[in-house]
Image 1 (cartoon, rainbow, N blue to C red):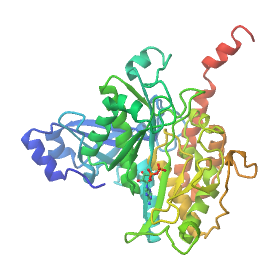
Image 2 (tube, rainbow, N blue to C red; image 1 turned 30 degrees about the vertical axis):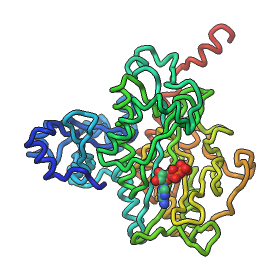
Image 3 (cartoon, rainbow, N blue to C red; image 1 turned 90 degrees about the vertical axis):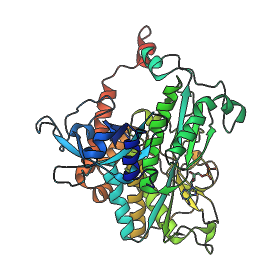
Image 4 (cartoon, rainbow, N blue to C red; image 1 turned 180 degrees about the vertical axis):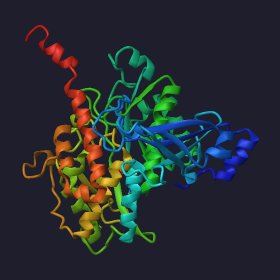
Amino acid sequence: MPSTLTFDDLKSQVAAGSIDTVLACFVDMQGRLMGKRFHAVNFVETSFKETHCCNYLLATDLEMATPDGYASTNWQSGYGDYVMKPDLATIRPLPWLEGTALVLCDILDHHENPVSHSPRAMLKKQIKRLEALGYEAKMATELEFFLFEKSLDEIRKSGFRDLQPISGYNEDYHILQTTKEEGVMRPIRNHLFAAGLPIENTKGEAEAGQEELNIRYSPALDCADYHSIAKHAIKEIAWQQGRAASFLPKWHKDRVGSSSHVHQSLWQDGEAMFFDASKPHGKSDLMSHYMAGLIKYAPEYTYFLAPYVNSYKRFAKGTFAPTKTVWSVDNRTAGFRLCGEGSKGVRVECRIGGSDLNPYLAQAVMLAAGIKGIEDALELAPATTGDVYEDAKAADIPQTLRMATQTLRTSAFLREALGDDVVDHYTRAAEWEQEEFDRTVTDWEIARGFERA
Ligand code: ADP
C-alpha cells in the first residue's frame, strides 16, 4: 500500500513529538483491526521488528469466545502466541486520533511462516498465484453502512431497541439529506484521505440513514487494507460524533440491507487485460474465463461473502441484493454485473457480498475462482437480461448460512486453492456461528408464541 509515512518519517515525527502512539494491528477472521497501542518510542526502537498476540485471535467469534474444534489452536495446545510482523510499507497517520499512527501486521508462526488461515496471508497467496500467470488484480470494495442517531454505547445499553436511523427517508443520491449528515461524513472522507486512502466519494444510499463510501480501485492487497482501515475509521469517527455506524447487513426486516460490492479487473504492465475492443461489450476472452470461474464457484465461496446468519436475510427479491449466480450487462438484479462496457474500464462487479464481508477473504476466494476459470478456460454462458429475480433457470446463491457451510465444507475447488486446513478452519467458524444461533431463543419466537402458542 503506498504509505504516507516511511519508517524514517515516523522516527522523525516521534522524535519531534508529533506522534506518540503507534497502533500495531492485524485483521482477524471477521475483518476487525486487532492489536496493541505502542508508545511510539518503544515502537521505533524495538517493537517495529515484531510483537506477539495470543493465537486464539484467529479462532474466535465476534464475542471473543473460544470455540472447540479448531486444529490450529485450542485448549489442548495451550493457546500460545503468534508473531505480529509489522509491514512497514503500511505505516500511516490516523488523523482522527491525536498523535497516532497505524501499522498493519502479518501473522506468522514461531518459524516465521505465514499462518495459513490468516486473512492477509490468504489473499497474498492468491495474488502470488495470479502473478505466476502474469496478471495483477485491481479491485474496489464499496462500503455501505447505516448511521444511527444515537451512539453505539447508548444503543447497546438500551438493548439495541428503537433504532433510529440518522435520516427520515430514502436518501439515495440525495444532496439535501446528506448535507445534514456532513458532521459525520465529511470528517470520514477527509481523515481517510489524509491517512493516504484514495477516497472517491460518499453518497446517500437507498434507505433512510444508509451511506456508501467509495475508494478508488487499487491492487488487491491495498484494496483490502483500505477497506479494513476505512470500516474501522467509520465506526470510530461516528462514535466521536456521538453517532453509531453499523455494518450489520440487515438490521430491520423491512429495510434494505447493506452490501459490499466488489469491482474486479486484471492488468498486465499497466494494460487493462479485461478489455478487447474487437469483442462484444469490449470483454476479452480472459475476462470471460475469469467471470465463468467466478460464477461457477460462487455457491462454494458464498460463505466468505456472507459469513453470519444475518447475512442471508439480505438476499431478498426486489431489493437490489442478488439471489442468482448469473451475469448481465449493467443490470443490478444479477449476482455479477459487467460495468464499463466497451471501455478500458470494463470490469466485473460481484454484488453478492454483504457489508459484513472480510475483504481479504472475499477477494482471496474470488481471485481463486477467477484463476480456476482462466486455468480451465471455462466458457462463459450468455448474459441474462431483464429481471433476474424471476429467472427460474438461473442458479441460486445459497439461501442460508447452513447451506453455504455445506457448499464450503465439500468444495474440492476451495480445498485445492486454499488448502484443506484453511477450509476446515473456516468451516468450523461457520458451524460455530450456526450453533450459537440455533441455541438462542429470539425475540420473534417469544412475541409470536408466548401467549398464542
Ligand atoms: P457505480 O456508478 O456503478 O457505483 P463507479 O464508477 O462509482 O460505479 O465505480 C465503482 C467502483 O469501481 C469505484 O470504486 C471505482 O474505483 C471502481 N472501478 C473503476 N474502474 C475499475 C476497474 N477497471 N477495475 C476495478 N474497479 C474499478
